[in-house]
Amino acid sequence: MKVVIVDPSKCTGCRLCEVACSLRATGECNPTRARIHVIGFDEAFCLPVTCFHCEIPYCAKICPTRAITKGKVGAVKVSRQKCIGCRVCVLACPFGNIAFSSAEKIVAKCELCDGEPECVLFCPTGALEFREVDTDMIHKKITFLEKLKEIYK
Image 1: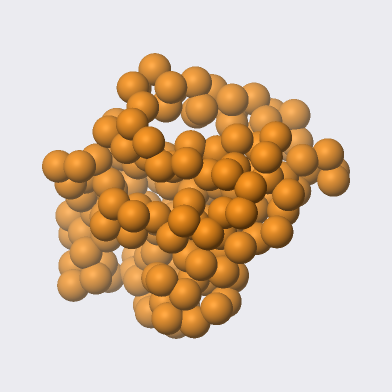
Image 2: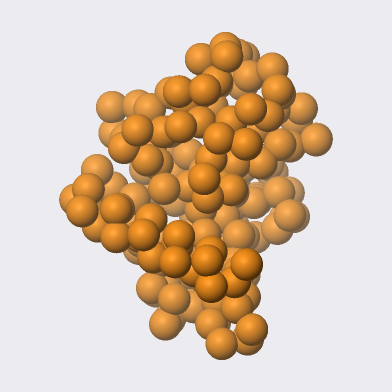
């Protein structure tokens, strides 16, 4: 499975990934509507965060209309036709990587740009990569983020 891999040591916090993502996803340069968000930690480092496309996505399991599915390639996607905007999936995501789009009246999340993530293409420092990973790597990322969450409560 291919996912967006982040190297925080290379991220400068330029937020070009957010601009590129918002333009691709919504047709406008509005980083607040991006599906990736750069989080700064006490100016020590920046961390771009986006959907992990979990092996077993809680968001999909809890969706009452089955609007969220995991495709063959591994991308977790939201059906614009089925989503009723109830936001239960927002609560179910343990990492906060799904948001309600008030402009679209449905939830919005990274869907990997059909295999060519704009955020990766526009990252000037190479902090973002789109590559194959094994499930062990994904579990390590999740564990790392859970530790960060505890530190910055």
